[in-house]
Length: 133
Image (cartoon, helix red, strand yellow):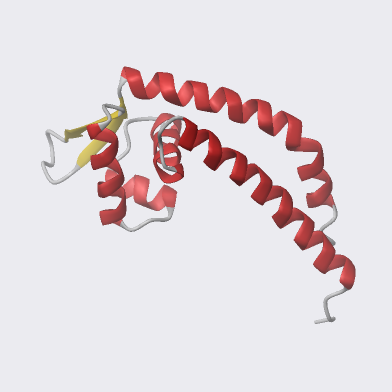
C-alpha cells in the first residue's frame, strides 16, 4: 500500500473540520431546546423509524449501550417528550414514540438543521470530493 500523501491528510482534516462544524451547530441547537445532543439524536431516531422502535433498535441506531438508551428515554419521559409502551406480545419489550410536545420540539430542531445543511452542503461536498479514491 502506498504511503499517505499530504493531499490525503489535508482532505481528511477538511472533512473532519466540516463535520465538526455541523455537529457543533447541532449540539448548540439541541441545548437551546433544553436537550442534550444524544437526547436530540434519540428523538430523531424515533421519528425516522417506520414504526415505534424498541430500545434495542435505538441502541443499535445510536451506537450506545442498552442501559444508556434506557437512561436517555427515562429523562425524555420526565420531560414529556417520549412515551414508552410495553409490547402486548412480549412484556419485556418496550416501544418508544414521540409525544405531541416531542414532535413539536423535534420539528423546530429539524427545520434549523435542514437550513444549516443547505448552507453547509457546498463545503461538505467539496470536502468529500477532496478524498482521493
